Length: 355
Image (cartoon, rainbow, N blue to C red; front, side, top):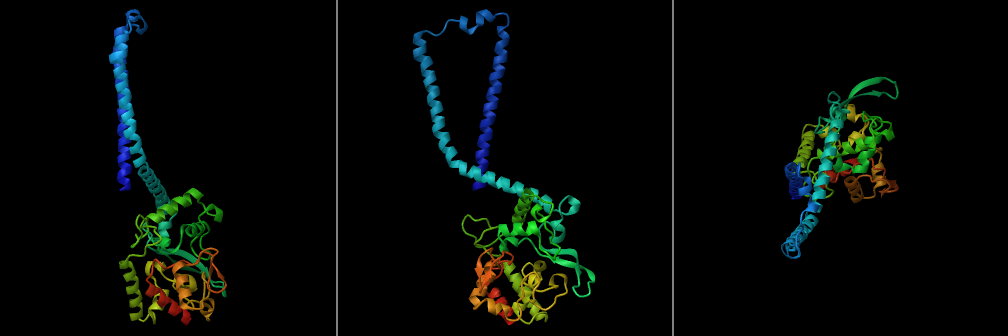
């Protein structure tokens, strides 16, 4: 509805502009033609040398024409001003949508592979759709100091706004993820992109999000807070977890979800909480890496009951907000409430409590 109104308003404005410009062109042409007849007769044709209207004409037809013109102009104002008032919000919304689309277009140029002039986000994260991929990286053994080349799972970014809000995504882009191939990209973090470019990149990443289901009325399905991952995608997550159990890769659905490789680990916990998982050499499950150690009863000591932990897994860590026992959020722990079903989250809770 909004784009249609915006288009209608723009069309009306362009038609009005064309009429005005066309009118001035016609007026100018008539003046040029009339001016040619005056050549050699300027004195006789001069306006101030011709007899003007008499009183009867001035107070009769001439006055009536001027009054009629005034009434016409008043009618135009009476009609146009309310129409402008009605269409202006939609025009502004259309203009905002236009800016968003342009921002996303500029962001796509930054996201593009190096060969296309971009910063190669697509090269690691699975193409322009951001479905997840791999990035070359080197890791150093802390004991032997041996350097090894690995392929690091670069998670899908087409669900990143399901897990993080815009400020958290901006932080990641600016400062990167330490000890991983995700370098800082913002100038404030030592990267090459200025604030405008980071804004453009965020706009593009929003445009490639998987559209959500069950959004509130009027909410954008790409970034709405109330929606969730489509049932089809949630079913694919469940099916992948069940296959892992059937194949003997995991003992429980919770363990399978914790280590889920779908989307290059975009839905998993092990990507942050298990050292080496991201490059195919996992250590002790949940013993900690970028995320803190979940083993040895640490989860049980931080969260007194399952409901607290379920709530935390759904919302994630919010900067400055308290959670569990003596916990304060940093914004680094993503929220999975919009991605996973309640049952899937409870399966994960049961698994991490067992660690």
